[in-house]
Length: 448
Ligand SMILES: *Cc1c(COP(=O)(O)O)cnc(C)c1O
Image 1 (cartoon, rainbow, N blue to C red):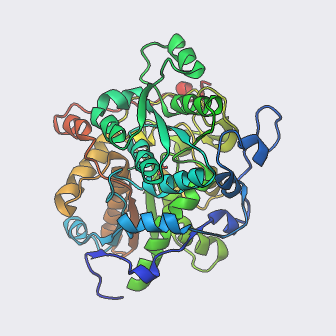
Image 2 (cartoon, protein in one colour):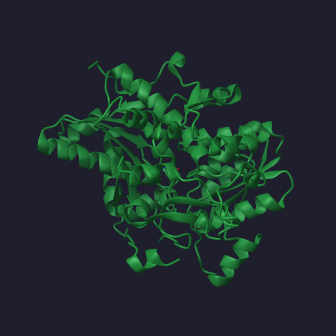
Image 3 (cartoon, rainbow, N blue to C red):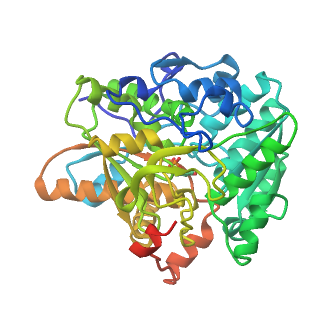
């Protein structure tokens, strides 16, 4: 093992020039998206009114291992990548653990999260196709911000449907997006049929990602030269996010380290799916065995740990294709947990399939446990973590504590997906001792 610095940035010549498609290594592929109208797997033609052509090609390709990253995207990546791989020396010392803990920090860009990696790609392909406007949804606001930055970079108009709970809880998020030129609407809004229908049923609703997706898709298909983009869940998003894993992999190679445990928080599964991609390739192909992969989710939205593996809609309005995934039901509206980015009823079909086939584990934590870890981490490592990312911190700390008890010096790698600067109301409620948690009853999960 090498002498390992606190913060490591991959040298320019080692930076990935291609994204890695984990599906290529999967012995059993994720089930295809289904067109609910025909009951058959979606075709490129089915998707064309909604998504850009190149992104459809990426979405439907289960076999090509590598996709070249276009130069214009590499040039943008160069502004904020590589992201650092950090050895958590101070956390290790505080926990008195023999484990070696590493984390990949994706919060060093204005969006404050990994989402910029895929937003740039999606905006680029839209522009290259001659599309003029994009629509999307955003929960906590990170995706909307990442896409607003990307649309500003490539010259596209953008309408963002922002989950009403977050819109009210994080007013400055909206202004960041507006600064980059986006139009931001609180969802459910009265500008779409889907939004009006949801408001009619429940005028006081704080909204959900599933509902905002319905509105954004409807707007895309009813607006000329407009397409919809999604920040997580889809295969194409995990493809773009593989840049996180590829950089981590190269850095670990440079350290002559290999993770025994890879941990990530899981909302729709994109940062986790991206982080694990090259390591999971080694697991699936037998090149390196014994690595554990852990998805961490909130107890208030326990998709993998308590959901069902079945075909479901990706949105509340049931207008999207159906995906075979772990789901709490398209009608499930999670309680107002502070980790907005983890409040989604479904899960990436790739992550779902790997979990179902026994290649991954999943755990769920209550938010007070998560914030306890976030505060301890901030004081030691000097980074204020996003509440979403703090789920991964909690799990990494618990695994490191197990190592202290067993005396094993395992290598733990976790994804620190973003910063928490826009989540200070959440930190305030934790610090004031007013934070609770709402864990859904079985009957609420079964409800459709
Ligand atoms: C959106 C978000 C997540 C969850 O999304 P995934 O697709 O599961 O990665 C996690 N962390 C941060 C900081 C986010 O913004």
